[in-house]
Image 1 (cartoon, rainbow, N blue to C red):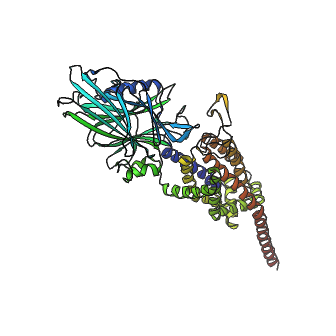
Image 2 (cartoon, helix red, strand yellow; image 1 turned 135 degrees about the horizontal axis):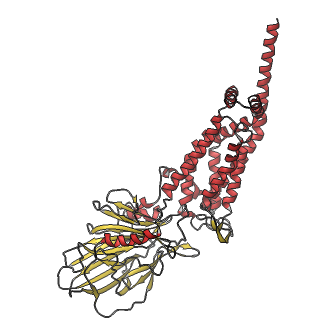
Length: 595
């Protein structure tokens, strides 16, 4: 194989690797690591950025009501409420499971603050954690209402009342509306105002399901923001702090994982004076925490009622789009472009088509593993004309092995002469050394689209392929766990990456059959080095993605073996015939000279 062919193959591998890296950047953005000391500075910075110390003491009035936490089940939610701070300690989704139990969306440990905690002014270190009285009822219009109330006064004796109300849909929608009312009994201005802010509301500390680390490139947690009439922007943390643009009006902020999201939307216009997020890294409990803070501007009024919406649910278009189109049965939130929280790329239209075909197969055989295999076979059949050109080129190159060896023997120490002779040979035999690479590059967009689809497809979450081996196509297959951690791999042993690597090695060996013109070192690297690199890259990939790639390799091996067996003999005969014709012409010329 001549130098140009080697370069073409190397470039193809580079394109694939870069493409996967691009895909990772767009589909699986991992938050930059924060050193342990930065975690502390982030918390300190947050307290300072959200506001200066309040300087106003807030005292709960009257006897404390019942402080026992309680749960409310309504629609798709099982929500744990805590009367302390009228806050939320748990949000579980009854329709989505994690290890057989309703998935917990609020990932926190015992030392973390609850979600929807209020803080005095803009000071995140001053929680209003008094115990609120509470009640629960169905309003008869499809909502379960959980209400909290508590009277307070400032250190100067100015009284005010805080009411917090949660409206939970009973029809299975994934939106919770939160109403916060602050009022004074005598019509005087609300004394809760601190500096230029009234209160701060938090959502966090993390979106579930739970995780042990963020070292897995196929999972992530991130914060996003959308300003009015703008696209989603993913937060870039600076020493653990992200501050929203103060010159823009925040439409929503989101805390997201691969499959679920919290999206906090201030529905009351013009009330938010600032929005921030804090990221901390811990050694225990929740390894990475991302908490959203929204600060309510001060008001000279004696009574305010602020409305917030929280989308807490799956990153699924059908669940999100109803709030963009105003099609919700219980809420009238619309126009916030919530669907943009779903990861997408320039090939999202192709992903949609491929997903539609995948769902068709699933309707026939309700097993997503089998559906992925059938989809892969269908794609290989559709791309067969392109693949055939590459395989024919490989087979023809294999048939030229004797002549390539002859050239190497003729010019053992002259690489330039070897390349020139091989180029002449390829031209005479009408072979394009790029023939086996170009079809792969043409198919590249489909590979990337399938990569995105199978890496982030919500339908694969919890979908079993083979009981006892692959119980969930959205996560790696774990056959057993070691009592110690292996470098770069961890303690969990996955079988699919091993099978994928073996199939890739065989595929590389088959496609390089007869390519004796390449340097031995390069051949070994392509055959064994690249599969080994991809083994580490793909080790923690979702099972569905590895199943696709392994199926591609197995089919490609079968196709190339058949083509080599069928075409190599044909090409060898054609080459022999051409050689015979050339030899006959040479003999004829010799005879003419003698005459």
